[in-house]
Length: 112
Length: 116
Image (cartoon, rainbow over all chains, first blue to last red; front, side, top):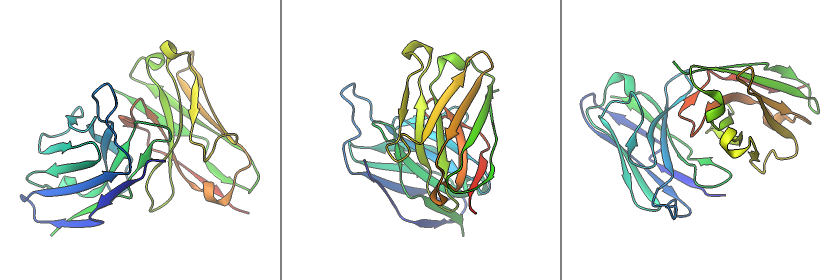
């Protein structure tokens, strides 16, 4: 299985400041079709996960453009600009390249 | 509006069976792969498998961790997705979600507890 490793485990951010979350995969997530199959999800407290970023850098529908995704074949970053109270929760990266799809252990974002 | 609503969870004894359902609405159901994903309390999600869309013959793929015990099916006339779980174990205790396509929409989840 592809292992997804996230860092840090938690991050505390002052509202209005930026935050970055890293994710590393144990195998390249770049498909031969040129698409990198890494996804980012946010699970707000008591809620289901919601999609933020798909295929490494594409913003999901309805997601504020304060969120952005970038990376290479195995190293990925989710950046949140101008953090707001509604951004609190656990962020997961996931790979949808091959069976079984796997997720990172999560990064908890809190406000200072 | 896309809606996914799971049902059928609860308490089951080890070795028992349970079937979960997911009612889908707000999109053309047959156009999409449909997934089951579970999440033990305080842990990361675990993908269980998917059933493909009409164009891909409604075939299935499973996580090896549950293959042979869990079966995913769909009723395209009712826009329903199902997860049949057999030989349940304590480690199957989790919140179970149905999710569309590339997990772009998730249901609210249903709790399954396997305990004697």
